[in-house]
Length: 217
Ligand code: GLN
Image (cartoon, rainbow, N blue to C red):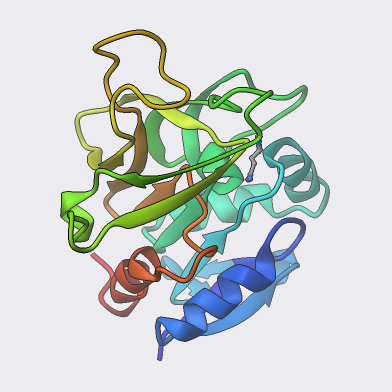
C-alpha cells in the first residue's frame, strides 16, 4: 500500500483521502514543511506520492509560502515524486497561469498554461461525461466529471500527455466548432485534472495515480 500525502492546508482533503483509500493507498495529511523533507531525491519520511487538492489556489499558495512549504514542494516535484493536482491543485502545478490571483505563486512542474476560473464566474459548477479514451472512458463506461470554478489548460508543452477534454460545443465554449477544452494532463510523474476526481465515486484517476505511486516513472 503506497503512502500518499494529501496537502491539508485548505480544500477538499477528506474527499481525496477517501478516494485514495478506495484506490488502495494509505492517505496521510501533510501540514508541515518537515513532512516534505527531501533526501536522496525522495520524500522523507516515506511519502510515495502527494495530492494537491481542490480549494482556492491563491489562498493555498499563500499558506504554502508562510509555512515554508513552497520550496520543499518544488524540490520534491522536481525530484520526480508522483503528484496529483485537482482543480486548485492543477493551478498550483502549472508553470504558467492566466487570470492568477493577487500574489499567487506556482509550485510548477507542469509545462502548461492554465486559465484559472476558466469555466466562468456565473457558471460556478458544471458537469459532463468527458472525452477520455486514455482513461478508459467510452460510451459504455463514461467518465463523469464535476467542475467547480475550474481551470482549463490553454496550452500544453510537447512533453505533456493530454488525457481528457470536454466535448466540443458544451458549456464554457464559445461558438460553433469550438474544440474541447483540455481538462486532464500528465507529464512524467505529474498528473492534473481540472475537475474533481475525488467527487462522485469514479476512482479511475486515483487508481491511475496510486499505480504511479507504486511504480514511480
Ligand atoms: N477557482 C479555484 C482556484 O482558482 C479552484 C476551484 C476548485 O478547486 N474547486 O484555485
